[in-house]
Every structure is written in structure tokens, then in C-alpha cells.
Image (cartoon, rainbow, N blue to C red):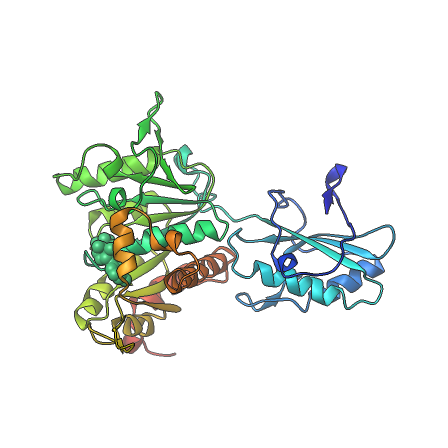
Length: 413
Ligand code: ADP
């Protein structure tokens, strides 16, 4: 498909459908000013729209026409070729290849159609849109995701780094803010070519970059870990986050320090956190701590969209799967607070050695089973955030009530 002068798109015939053609073609076209739902009085275009109504977004439970994803629809002068532009809620949409394939498949069922050309754009809503006083360096950030745990050493930073790399592989622009001033892990876990934060004359900070992901960590400030009192730490974290030039990002991941202290509350007040991912381990003791963490997010009106139960299992030399820490704190927390996704991450020596060597496993083995689990987490985050941004997620009232009140303590009316 080629862009025409005046903003239209022109259909072009291509031959055959291969597996490669199922892959979505993305462009940077800005279609956000086009009408919310495409409609047409042209008979052929109406037929195409009817076909597209068979393509259902699995998360919204609605067809892609009514979801407002169809932004441009053209039938060529020959009357045989159709060109479409679909606008997604995020470039990392996990079902974009499916949308591409199904749109072509259904439209080609019209007997007059020879060829269908689909391109996709993404116009994510910005988390900062409703924050007029947002610091300039954060204005291009669309979504802020907190990666949190209530204890140290459960694998929060490992989850954060591997998830960031995965979201970038899915097509998103990603940043990581390492909010752990006492023990920043990122300088060990990734190896950027240039690993010092630079401060410009105007006082803004340029993030370090690794594999296309922008990273800010106290560990890159050349200070090592810090011995400071709480208020100093909160001030420093606030300053690092808000004076960094993040540019355009689809997802900024906050690698939170362990616990539920001042820094968490400060961050929750300084920036609008879109959603949280909670990392825990299977022990019963972990449940009690995670419970505190989920309640803290409830106070901040941040929905928890997924629980990662890390170090859930390991596979022995005998091929058997063992659960060394028992079963279930992740499941209990999801059930108690209606958190929609639980991902069990096994103990995997490659994750640990990847963390120590500075190359996360999701990068060194992108098609392996662990990378697939991070892709699952990525898909959960992308989907739930899209729901939240479209108003289909929990309302503020539901967020604070449903999340802060365990199922067992609720009464029905
Ligand atoms: P936290 O951020 O919660 O303090 P880290 O992500 O730093 O925890 O992980 C602690 C240690 O455990 C690191 O050495 C890391 O490589 C290792 N680790 C984390 N998750 C796993 C896992 N699933 N399998 C094996 N090692 C892991």
C-alpha cells in the first residue's frame, strides 16, 4: 500500500498469501485525528466493513470495526483490491498478526475482491495526557508500569529487565527506571555500551540505552549504592525520574525497591502509574507480604494486572518437575484480589547466569521456553493496559474497593 497525497491510501495488488504475509506491517502514520468509527455510504466499502465485523478483539470482546480500529478503507479504481489501515492501541499488540490474517481472510471471501492490503498504526493514549503539570521529560510516556515485590531477592529486577526486553521485541518503545537506590541491580544485569548518565546544561538527564531500551538507574550515576535517610532517597528518586529525558515511550517500567515504603508512595504521587505487576515466590510467608503490596497499590488506585510467581518449580535431572517452595501464594493472591493473570516462572539457571553476565535470557535465547513465558507476561500487560486506557478496565471505585477488599471479606448486595 502506498501513502497518497492528501492523506489517503491506495490499494495495490499483490500475489498470493504466504506465512510472511500474516505478519502485521506497522507504520508511524498518525491516524488519531480520524473519526472514532469508520463508516461509508459506498456499497463495496460497506460490504468490506461487514466482513471485518467478523474479526473480534479477544480482550474487548468486540469486533474491530466497532472498536474503532478501522481508520482507512479504500477500494481501488479497478474495484478489485482493498486497502485498510487499522489503528491499534499499542504497537506491541499481541494479536496484530491475527488481525492482519483474519481481516484478509474474511474480506477475500467477497467474490469481487482480488487482494487485500492491511497496514497498522498505533495510537496509544498517554498516561500523562491528564497531568498538565507533568515534567517535560515524561510527557511522551504513554504508560507507566510498576514492577513490585514486597521482599528483596524474589526476582523483581530479573522480571523487570526481561519483561522490558520482551516488550521491545514485541514492537514497543520501552524504558526502565531502577528506583532501588540502596541496591540498584541494573548495572549488573545489562551491559550498555556507555554506562554513565549524562546531565545536560539545562539539568536534564539523558538515559543510558541498551538494546533500544532507555534505562535510568542510580547505579549509572557513578555513586554505587547509597547510605541515605528515607526523605533524601525519595527526593533523589523523584529527581532522577522527573528530570530524565525519556522521549516517546509506550511503556516505562518502574523497578520498585522492595517493600511498601516512602518511595512507593512518592512515586505513586509523582507519576500516574497505569498498572502494577507483582513478583512473589510460592511460600505462604510470601502471601502475607504480597497482600500488603497489593493493598498499597489499591490505596494509590493502581490495578495489579499480573502476579509472577517466580521460582515456582524446577525440573530435575530425572525430568521430574519439583516445587521446592510448595504451592500456591501466587494463586491465592490472584484469587483473593481478582488479579487476572498468574504466570509461574520456573527456577532457571540461565536466568541467573544471564543476570550475572549482563545479557538477559530473553535476549540471548529469544525463542526458548523462558522467553515464551516473558512473552506471556508481556501480552498480559499490553492487553490489560489497553483495557484500562479504553475505559474497559476497573473504574477508580472498583480499583480501590475490589482490590483493597479480599474476596472473603466482601458482602454481596
Ligand atoms: P530482586 O530484584 O527481587 O531483589 P533479583 O531479580 O535481583 O531479585 O534476583 C535475585 C537473584 O535470583 C539474582 O541472582 C537472579 O539472577 C536470581 N533469579 C531470579 N529469578 C530466577 C529464576 N527464576 N531462576 C533462577 N534464578 C533466578
